Picture 1 (tube, rainbow, N blue to C red):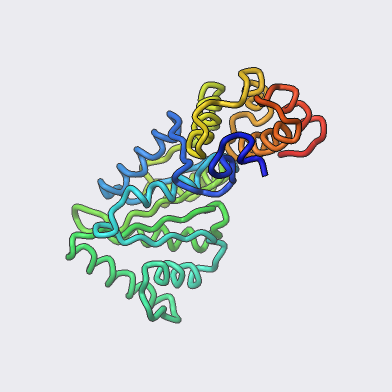
Picture 2: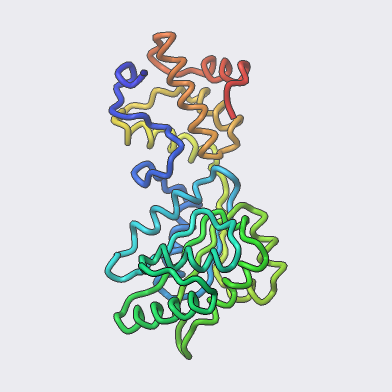
Amino acid sequence: MYLEHWGLKEFPYENVPDPRFFYLSHHHEEALSRLLYAVKMRKGGTMLSGDIGCGKTTLTKVCIQELSADRYDISLIVNPKLEPLEFLQEVVYQLGIPDVPDTKVKCLRVLNDRMSQNMRADKETLLMVDEAQLLNQATLEEIRLLLNAQLNDRFLITIILFGQPELRERIKAVQQLDQRIPIKYHLAPFDLEDTARYVAFRLSRAGRERNVFTQPAIEEIYAVSKGVPRKINNLCDLALLIGYSKNQAMVDVDVVETIIRDGALL
């Protein structure tokens, strides 16, 4: 609708985990650095937590893009609200193993064989679990046991858990698992400076080199969104729509305040 008005080639503020629109704030850069370090140095367990809408799912996509398919055998679980057997079956399926076993013992045997096969082929086995706060206690125990797959000098699998802040408390409550997760990071929202850069970055990615948001508008967007990328996207998308409907050359603070008054966001 508003693309031509703002000189855009595509919509800049879609709430989908598109790596092309991934903005590397200092927090996101640190998170990505720790994730890649954990994988490449075979650190076993890793946990990334963050509030809803802070970019955890996008980080999983970016992390996968950074890893060569020739070197990494990756199982990505996006809906982990599963019983232990179902979880292990999904891990097997996501590794591309055609015949998924019907018992836990057989699943573990298949996984152990795959991890050993990967090691001999100089490949790494990686399990990534999004929305990990949804894991039940029994499935968390299976993850702990998977981390027992190791030789004297290395883990045979790296497991990364992505989840909302409550995941940290759940992991901390299981001491045996907590001790197997040496790398932990909490993804914070943007500050005002990163919010401004994020807004401009996504416009640029969508084909608009000059920013269309005034500084007061950016400051209001930050105040309302508290720096959460998903909320910033919602605000900016509506602001572009309203600015277009009013035939404005810039999105000013009045447009943002109109959205807030109407209660049409967040």
